Length: 384
Image (tube, rainbow, N blue to C red):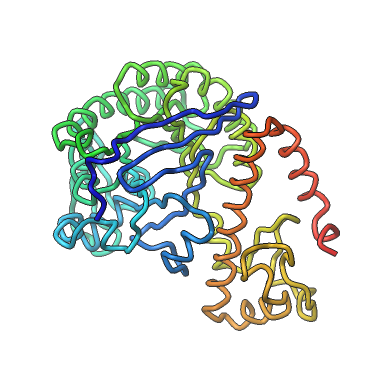
C-alpha cells in the first residue's frame, strides 16, 4: 500500500480559459487531473466493470458510498482487511461521500435532529445513528483520500425557510465534521475533507453557505443539493452565483452530476469534479453515450446494423462490436450487454473530460463546448 505520508493532499491550478479550470489534485494514491469525472463505485465496485478496466478508461478516482459500506460489509471490517483501496483492488484515489443523501433517500423511519440522523437500514431494518462525527469516522476507517462532511440534502422545490434551516444545519455539521477529521489525523495522512455548499435554489442562501464554508479550513469545496429534480437552467444559475464565492485555490466538486451536457456547462462555470451514476446505470439499461449523442440499443432499428457505436473510439466496446450484436445482447438480457455498454459509457465520459482538459490547456474551451454540442445535435448522421 502507498505510504500515505509521502503525498499530502494538494491542489494546483494549472490553466484557466474563461471560467473553465485545468488543475491537478494530489492525494496519497496518485494525481487526479481536473476537470475530472469520478465513476461511482457504490458498494466498493463500479457495477459491471473490473477495476483495471475502469482505470484503462482514463479514470483517476472512483467514488465509494459511506451509507452502503457502513451497512455492508461495515467500515470496521474494511479497515481490518486493509482499507478500501486494498479491499476493492483500486490503488488509486478514492472519494467517499458522507452517506447523508442515501439516508434521506433510502433509509426507513428517518428522524433528523441537531445531533444527526437516526434511521433504519433499508436492508434489514437495523437501527443506526449517523452523526457528522460518525460519518467522518467511517470514512477514516475506509481510508478514502477525499472525504465529505455530513450535510442535509433536501428535495427541490422546498419553502425558503426549510432550505435555510437545512443550509444552516449543514454549516454547523461542517464545523463538527472538520473537528472530527483533524481528531482522526486526516491531514497528517494526506487526506482531504470537503465542505458542502447548500442553499437549494435560493441564490442568497447559496452565497451565504459558500462564504461561511470558505472561512473553514477545508481542502476542497462541493456544491450539493442540486441534480435533485430541478431543471438544468436552475442548476446552472446556482453555479453562476456560487462558484465566484468559492475559494479559487481549492478544488470545486459538483455532486451527483450528470449528463455530458451538464458536465460541459458546469466546467464552463468553474467546476472541477463530478460524479454520477448515469453512465453506469444507462449502460445496464441499454443506453450508450457516444460522440454522436445517445444510442438506445433497445430500438429495433439496430437489429440489422453492422456498424459499431464508434469506429474511431479507442474503447473496444465502442469499436469492436456491432450495434446489431449489442441490440441482441440487450434484448436477450445478457450480462455482457451491461458490461460492454457500461465500458463504452465510462470510456466516453473520460474521453469527454480529456477533451475538455486539452481544450482548456490550448485556450479553446468555448470552441470545444460548442462543437461537441453541435456533434450531439447531428446525432447518428455524423457516424455514417
